[in-house]
Length: 327
Ligand code: XMP
Image (cartoon, rainbow, N blue to C red):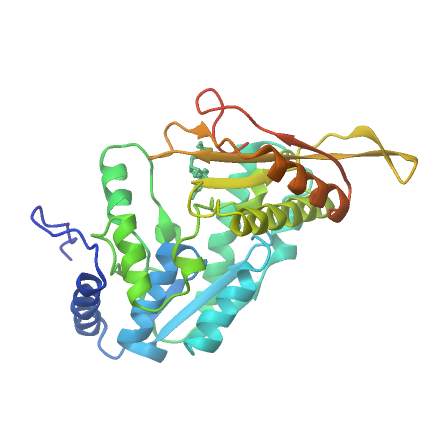
């Protein structure tokens, strides 16, 4: 099959009307490609796969099987949102797999960042493949490939394997309805499809999830501290008008403890590190100047609400020399 390319003269999708026209064109194309066959989609809840899911639900309804794998490294409330939006509101054919134990058991005592990524990536493919084998009559695999992915692989910057790493017995024809779109266009299309703003405007979130924000060997209690502190940071940034203004913000909980005092007694607990950065292309980044009073408030909430934490630090380092994520 000839792989589709973005036409040189294609108008940038910047309005609901243009998004609507694109959606109608794609619905017709998907119907033509798929006919009455079934399509499988790994639905992470990220912008790209969510937009593909919403588009395909419109085009082929119950012929789409969405598989949402919870690897235990998602942010607070993410799996619940996928189930609510797709399973309940859009009535999608959604398979939810809670594979938390499978992932976290494999990651016990693994400290090397690359090995962690490798385990998470491989396990993801295995869990997804297990689910795919349970489904009857699937002939197509949908992917949220977007135009920058194609450009980056062509230029040798990043290998975008997506679900292309599936085993031999699971080779499907690809359905990639947003492959010629830039990210801002995918968001515009998502809005026109009625996806919630919180899903369309999500900040970037790495595939290995909170796993890269729990540096060193992941333990369930430290992972919980990452998840809870991240939820507080996101809530406070939203309340204080920083959501949408700051490009990416999150917390890390490194694998060391320091002395403190809690309730008049010595404590020996982790620090939470806050990171808030701005960038255009994620190749370089600067640090957000967060108001001091807000930092004090966030610190107060984290040290009182997050178990196992007695300090909060702010990472002032731009990229370079630091990367945005810790691993
Ligand atoms: P770094 O840490 O390299 O991150 O400065 C740049 C941007 O890429 C995101 N990132 C990832 N995204 N899989 C992804 O899909 C990954 O493994 C991954 N690692 C980093 C990161 O969140 C930041 O926005």
